[in-house]
Length: 125
Image (cartoon, rainbow, N blue to C red; front, side, top):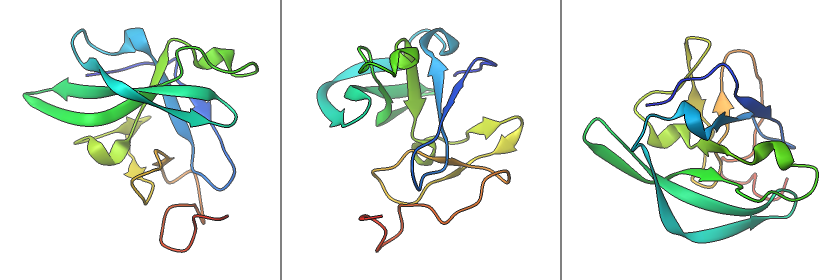
């Protein structure tokens, strides 16, 4: 459904990394824009996509910043996936473990250690 060697690895406080993939890394017909926007105080307005592949459709499983705030321009023309909504996500061949919590989209591999936001009691970190 997507493959790239040009992902952007973004780190935020108390989060495992999130990988933003170039939109052209996704196979045609995989990303389907859906209504609704959220706002990140740093990156700006996020839009969402349903992700469809292999006869399955994951609702709002990807997000993007089509017009990111100043300082985050590199995120334009990229999208990130919630790994917990995918059958499989890999970084350098290693299976990604999703970050706890339905709000977060961090990608946990053996190369990163926590603690991370997401489990109960960590919202206010």
